[in-house]
Image 1 (tube, rainbow, N blue to C red):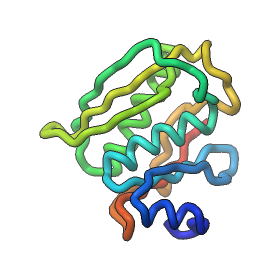
Image 2: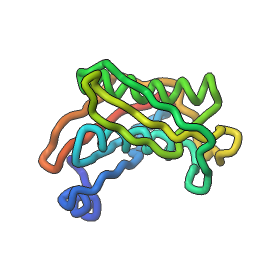
Image 3: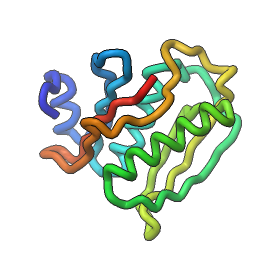
Length: 151
């Protein structure tokens, strides 16, 4: 991604996945990357969670599997993050781990979830995905994405 720090760039050249929050007025902006589209999507979820919660010492209490069928990549990114936000708002659960796999349907997702009450909240809980400046696609090192989240 443009603006990668030296450490981020070295890690990306070695095929590492990752994410970071970037400054954005009143909302959350997340950048994520991975060797594959699926790695990038998983990192976007972890990046969004990291913007508002510390899940480092929390164990999952449930596991859910999702099948997403919105195959254009930008729709897939938005749909996955909206699924996570739904679980936060309606079910009071937050992902502590995520795995993504390509499938004939489009994308299979495994979410390891913890109760939101068991998590240290460190920022504003996300409310929705903004389509403005949402992007995902291949880059010289694999895949990268950027998305703004309403908080």
